[in-house]
Image (tube, rainbow, N blue to C red; front, side, top):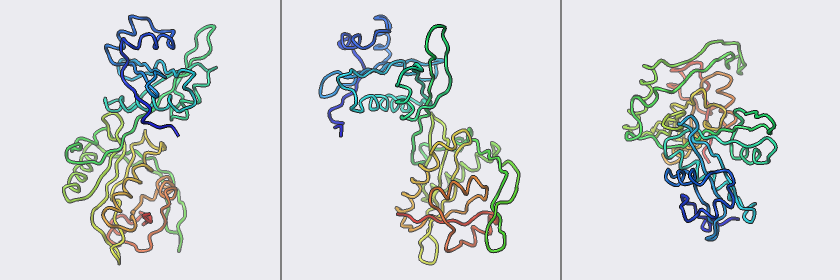
Length: 316
């Protein structure tokens, strides 16, 4: 296993010029000086020796684009390229960027490396006589506990609740069955702000909430109501749980669900309770997390949303 204490990453300096140009055959000396000035180039050291470099610019003047990642052949197969890329991604996220880009030729193996890091194909460039240039992108999501200091009534203004529903689970005798139910559920700006206000009021009452943040935008959130209930006070309610439409199916819901479970345990709960939207996609997500039908139904929650499925998740 690679010892991270052996790795150091810093911005490139003029003293790194010889090492830099031993690896980078494309950049001019004047542009390298610009990169140093703007802090858009890094050198990775392994056991005190320079081992890799990374430089970037801003595509469209607003999106970080990694234009070169190179690890000296002596230091390859140690995970150093991954470490350097993840360091850059963290710095870009800390600077407020929610999307990063890179590119590689279609005849190079680097494309597989980037895909393993979560990058997805997003376009290509065809130059006459040259292999196709593949463009890859990655959203950078960070997860935070929401507080009155980082969340306000306008924090969900850009959130897209939109959900196109075609089938829902409905009672069919003693069981449930999928039934054709077609509608689109969405929130107006006023409804988004009402939800934000609800979260703020819940935080003031001692509840816990978490947000998935891309750039400076909240793209998912989970709210845990602080009150325990059930015959043995075993339950706590996952009161609100949503991911913005463009960010679904990227693992954000699962990450938020895990954070909610951690908070639920801290409150002393044994099980997470969910009054779940009956749409086919919503229930499929909960089932993939390991949720099952609740053994004790909270009548107040069930009567509030009679079409919801009452679920639970055993906290480990």
